[in-house]
Amino acid sequence: MLKQIEGSRAVAEAVALCRPEVISAYPISPQTHIVEALSEFVRTGELSPCEYINVESEFAAMSGCIGASAMGARTYTATASQGILFMAEAVFNASGLGLPIVMTVANRAIGAPINIWNDHSDSMALRDSGWLQLFAENNQEALDLHIQAFKLAEALSLPIMVCMDGFILTHAYERVDIPSQALVDAYLPPYVPRQVLDPDDPVSIGAMVGPEAFTEVRYLAHARQMQALELIPELALEFRQAFGRDSGGLISPYFSDESETVVVALGSVLGTIKDVVDELRTEGKSIGVLGIKTFRPFPLDAVREAIGHAKRVVVIERSFAIGQGGIVADSLRKALAGLHIPTHTVVAGLGGRPITTVSLDRLFRTALSGELGNLTFLDLDHAAVDRVLAHEREVRRSGPGANRMVQEIARANVRIV
Image (cartoon, rainbow, N blue to C red; front, side, top):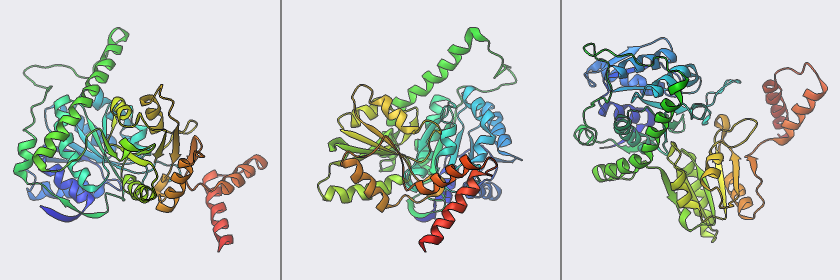
């Protein structure tokens, strides 16, 4: 059924259609509307049987999910930003125990300084925690990926983060197709756990493992996650056959197979990138786009096959590793190893800064001319940065750099006016 609906509400309805038996969650913007809607579904009996656990923190939320999933319940939660950092210890425990928890991450920047707007710093900070990570381009895909995520998680007995851009998607109203309960039930069978705590057959989980076996245990987690590279395309194909639309998968090519320059990105920025690429292609420019849908495990072979012919690759990153540079770009370089394809990192949209078509057009033209550097910060105010760095060199007690930067940019804007 087509509905004009907020992204968070669409995800909540999709999760409810998956019949979770336990939801353990703590509110934090911009995911709060998701768990609020689910709590209402549970209260009214629209989602039943399901226990909604009110907890005192994000750490408690994930701890509740671990207990529920270990007992054999289909389990769900959601978080963002500082919330996922607060639950980090439990996040690693969930994957180490092989528990098929599904978690929405409404991507948001991490402080300090405090910033509530969108970038990918939160999920990227936990990228190596052993959870699968799927990224949605739009709200229809966010809805669809949650349905696929429950099936994938339970098939592999591994937890999954479904990542959607905070505010940009969670609070945007779009027309989406909400499937029927019967259709979801036909695609997603009742949950039969691969492992479950049984009082009649007691075992210990998460117990001590010494040096003699720890490497093998960690390798098992890696081997299970790598199985997802084969299973994700299969489930996406099944989804298309059942629901009548493409959604998810490992990658999403857009004229990339025929282009000399390929732009790679994750999440909602892909829509804006495609708009700019469309305009450049009308001028005869050889440029395409590759969307990464599955970031963990990273689809090295699929990426290499898709863009191994390119003359250059431009990676748009909404997060970066301080002191090094691009996170996604590092994975691209591994995928393209030995092909000698220049791979350029462009950090953009941090803390919710708009990624505009004007800036992207200028960036892509620079790349097409062969003049783009290895690491670029889109729309960075270099003059303000230089002034703050100069002040720190001159004044030992220079004060918080963030405050100084805000003041410098404010003064520059006043001078411009």
